[in-house]
Image 1 (cartoon, rainbow, N blue to C red):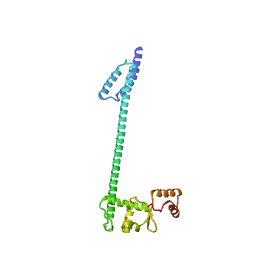
Image 2: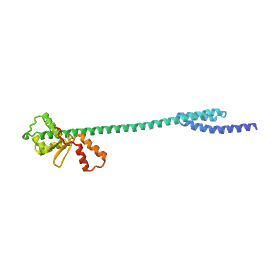
Image 3: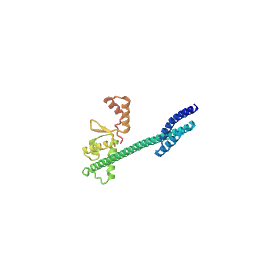
Image 4: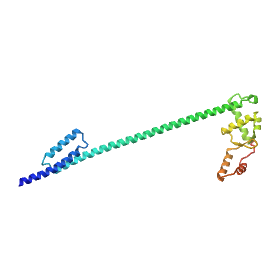
Length: 243
């Protein structure tokens, strides 16, 4: 009877041991290479065949297997983080490259605009130079310095006069009326002169301060009729000569 009881106990232990060995073998296999898995399986099998192995030893093996599985999970997690960080860095690098290309394109655009503007200004200058070189009308400009001086005199005359007719302007510089108009339009277009032409054909020069005063009046009043604007402009804009 005693022998049968001991056999039954061994069977129960063996049954529990087999289940624990299966768990340990499966857990330990995770995260190991082929040779390590084979070595671990051999160890677990040997321990499983030992009927006298204790629960404490099984617990240690189980904990070891769990630690290995945890390390493998952490390794996989680290690799995933590295992969994600690499992808983010590639995206940042792509964005930096995109920004660099945009900046280069903007610099190139500004360079082209500057060159085109300088080219236009040079062409306009040459046209004005040719227009002023009219010996038969009384001008015989021999160099750029004289040409610039004449243009400065032209602008100063209009600013000092404040109100000037095209006939008077042409006569003063010994130009035909059409030529005087062309020269005036040139200085209006390039921003050197600002003003309006009244119904009598006279040009009224308006200073920057006077323009700002008119603009301030319009902004303060909101909607302004032409008659109100004309009346107020007459008070703001001086028509007296500065000569």
